[in-house]
Length: 441
Image 1 (cartoon, rainbow, N blue to C red):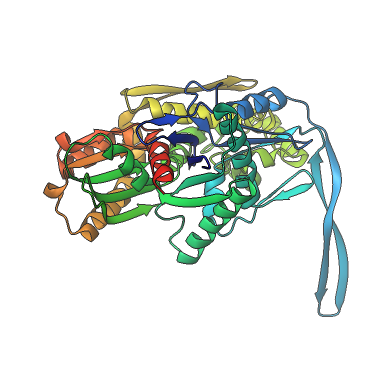
Image 2 (image 1 turned 30 degrees about the horizontal axis):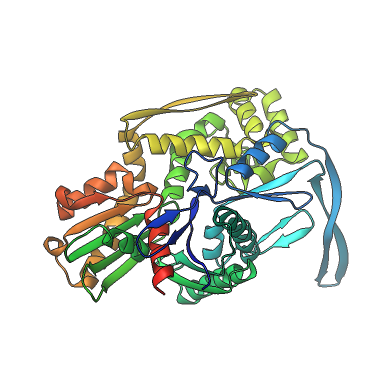
């Protein structure tokens, strides 16, 4: 009998679990993490194509990159063949490449599957498609799980959002890309379950009588909702829905609304090249690519001209000392703290950076309130599709890190009643349910 596992390949975090018919076992696939059963969906690939994931990837990235030396060389990138009117000429294109760059850190691998416009990325001399990145991560995750279990894993049930994309074609393509990646990672059998339905299967283990349950799965990449009848011999899905809003959007909003002034926003005018750099700060994928000799020269000239010198020194330090990942983690940590505290401090101190910003829950809720409208709409639309009234819902089960944000908990309490809103394990309920589905398949 082949071993089957549930795998939650999440936007921010992932996990693996097995079920024996009575108990779910969450596998400690990241012993270096504070919660070993939760592993960051982060991949670090070195120049020699050694690959690391989870906390090990983060540590390798910090070891190799932060405050490192750079050496740029001019490299031929191709040519442009121009024809027009009576003219025809060929022009060589050159780019500056940091030949000392030791590796690339990649995050939000699952998000890459959803974007039709994202074809992949070049990592040194190799081009990685979104499927290649998913395969690389799942291969390493499978090896970690097999090492814990001491045996080979042949089959997996993977979670997927209710909607990878609003486009049915892209939604299908994303699932097939992930399926192929899992097969190439070594899984002989692969099937899928909607993530909120998986969370419902885990919740069902705890109830003693039939209930109408709404699962509110709000993580790092998407909001997914499922309304189900649980506890009967015949389980029924009344409705499901989702929207492409989640924790990463809130992180970006915090940076755009509160952090950009620390890097010159509002003080730099008539310098479009610098404004372009400032506007790239919320984009963790774009920011490291700005570290070119041309951009450094632009920043140095502006600093010498006394154009917001302290702020632009901070921007220069953020870009050229590879502090983007650290910065985004500090912002995310501040956001998480506001689920329990009324205020927090977002800070970052390094060469030429002394960022300190008091951020309150009231400010955070004001910054993200426009998302509340969309979240409430998809919630009510899904409820309408189920043909149930709020009073007919017996329990509202929250899961995923973003579900703990008080603004959304208060929304659920307002619609369904505070006594019905229950918190499930933010990081393990989905993977536990996927393990149950894998066992029963």
